[in-house]
Picture 1 (tube, rainbow, N blue to C red):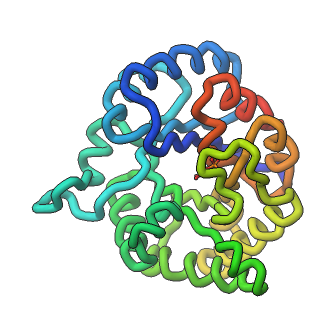
Picture 2 (cartoon, helix red, strand yellow):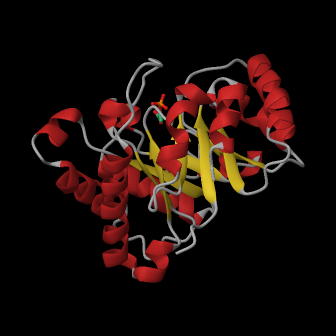
Length: 254
Ligand code: PEP
């Protein structure tokens, strides 16, 4: 079975000033100018979205945000709405990242955000993943199923949805020596997610929904992870902060 076009997304988290973002984009665009077979997304912090949006015009790189509120507007101090992200040129939005779950987001809130994103034509990159304790006790599949069912409640059509399998224990948190999941463990989880999507939306929709891997993906391990049959791309944190290393990951797509 031919794979769909892979998606490699950079999650910069709370990194890069506007000046640093502009200099990254200028270097990165040169490095990937001949790459046509990969969809690339950059998710900078809110403060750099506008300037990165301008810098990406005319390129083959898409813009994404790292979070959003589910309301269009209102008295929500410090929040950003889907309308605002659309206006600025975002195509994607990361939702349900484990670092946000740790600071209080639950599946029901993430579900509202997924629905709002899809309603506004934003493609959600929905993060799901188990903790080390859950994996140790054999609870990986239960946790993935629970998160996926709750976060996709009342989502009738998953068109545009991307699921990011991000085992919480593999996320680098800035530590370049952190180990990623093995390609076999990652593939097992991706296949399990694919089967869940199949049960929810049917075989065709599940086949057309990208399931990408996140957690210490770097130039050294990207090729073997991205070659697995059910891994359709990567969500990259730490290794996306350097233009050369992010470009090497993009180049690792076969
Ligand atoms: C992430 O947190 O989304 C992520 C993939 O981070 P890292 O690549 O640094 O593990």
